[in-house]
Image (cartoon, rainbow, N blue to C red):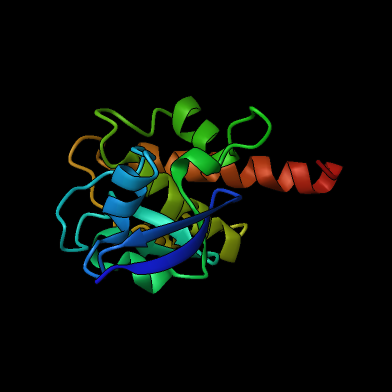
Length: 162
């Protein structure tokens, strides 16, 4: 028995009938075609599937799509605005915060959430905030540098009103 869900994803409302057991990550990737959200461990350990759900970072591999009914979701595809990378995305680019790129979408989404709660984090606070995301390639220092870059950029944008 299918259930109709209504979810706003990246600013667009989507109404679909889905199987109640469909995971949110599969809904995003297979139903909506948003393949930026990656499937890693499917047990919520790696964080590659992280998206924002009503402003909170969640791991979409352990959440059912029906649980997101009525919610607003932002995926990696929806983070940029008006053709401009989000400061965290730019930070990962400028500070070499990625290598293979598999963890990157989830890492960026989690980092954006960290900065939304703490616009001026220490390196230790960034590392703590990213604990639920694993990267096998970078050694993490470039990721921390990327988040610090984004924090500085966001602080500058706030000061100028951009």
